Length: 111
Image (cartoon, rainbow, N blue to C red):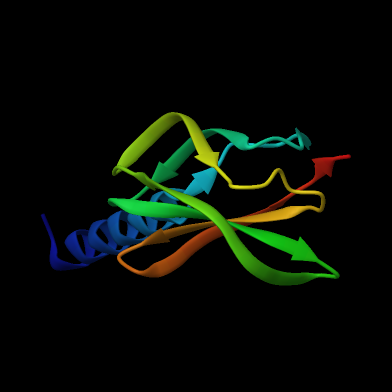
C-alpha cells in the first residue's frame, strides 16, 4: 500500500470514528412526561459509566436538583429517576460521564 493511500485511509478512519462517537451519548425520551415521583426516560446511551441528573427547569434556566440515577456504559433501557416531589414545571435531564456533561435535554412535564 502506498504512503498516500495509507494516509488517506487513516484520515477517513479517524473522520468516521469522530462521526460515530458524536452520537454515543443521548436520551431517547422524545415526548412529554406526566408529573410523577418517577420519571421514565426510556433508553439512555452513555459512552462510559455515568449519572443522569434531573433538574427543575423554569424560565429557560436550570434550577435545583430533583433526583439522579447511575447509568452504565452502553445502552441503558428503562431508565427511571425518582424525585422527592413530582415536578410542576419542565425538567432538564443532564447526562454526565466522567464528571463531564455529554448530553442534556429539556423534557416537558404535563400538568
